[in-house]
Length: 186
Ligand SMILES: Nc1ncnc2c1ncn2[C@@H]1O[C@H](COP(=O)(O)OP(=O)(O)O)[C@@H](O)[C@H]1O
Ligand SMILES: [Mg+2]
Image 1 (cartoon, rainbow, N blue to C red):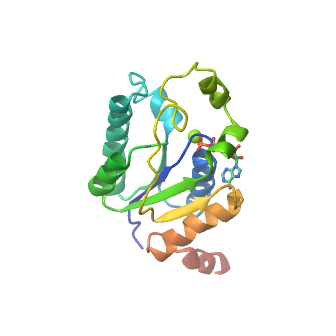
Image 2: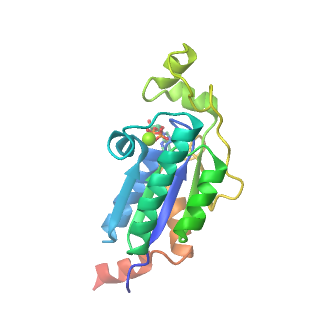
């Protein structure tokens, strides 16, 4: 079966679990021997979008660049994972339209819990007023209204969340894990 390209777009607050969850899904997609590429916010901002900050305009440009790259990868059959806060609904909808085979995953977690986790110590800094435009504190996050998958990382563990995403991919016909079992048993 020829691999069908798709983009899995993870959106959510900082610390919600986008990177953790997309890494777990990526691992499974690689195990299934798909061609996989993962565009993560932190890495893209270090290379492709080094020149951009966090104003609405700059966030928009950042997402436009990622959308463009993801659309090319998807067109050439790659399983593309995109993990960005991507707080603006309009930009995510543009990505959906441009990319086509698009699966939006809302990595949901209450702000208080993200703040408690404070994986990178950024919430503490934002509360002290040391970071401008911090999503959830001094900048908006527009929740998805029609996400294809919603995973609540405060309710489910990492494996359960990853399974929910993989289940959806299977139902949507992008992956075939049964086939994988058959090959294993041969
Ligand atoms: N169900 C879950 N899925 C993903 N991460 C979880 C989950 N439960 C707890 N966590 C923890 O939440 C934190 C999420 O951090 P990270 O993945 O860097 O978030 P983000 O990329 O969204 O900023 C990690 O410390 C992770 O271990
Ligand atoms: Mg991250």
